[in-house]
Image 1 (cartoon, rainbow, N blue to C red):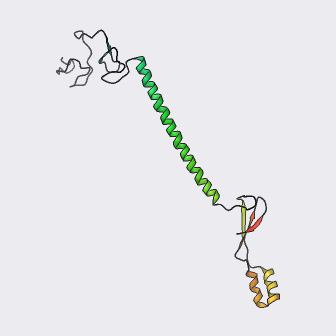
Image 2 (image 1 turned 30 degrees about the vertical axis):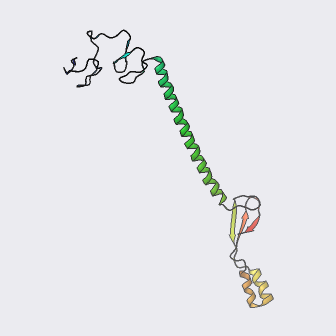
Length: 163
């Protein structure tokens, strides 16, 4: 057969020209078998029992079209399930991090509150006076006892404790 667009010699059963790539319309000279189906996508001739085009794999029947839709829907559902699983995994990892942060926070031993206030104790005048009266001038050192400790007060229940 000769291509009507570029006059190149091509095979008789071609749907497209191998030289110029244009679609070849069936001519009246070509006799199509009575049980043939023309593909709406590429124009190639297929047997009537075919569900898909042998040239471009386009669906030729309603059942084939339904198969393609069902397959596409299934792939979409699988992708959605995979995305949901990934989102769930990310949420679980974030929850673990938050739990670790909460566990590492200072809490009140009575109520478990994290609303705490801390004050560092300094030199105690009362301890120094009592120490000086009991031991003498060396007793002034007693004012430093516990000076480096931090007294923490729970703002929720009022419990005071040292850290």
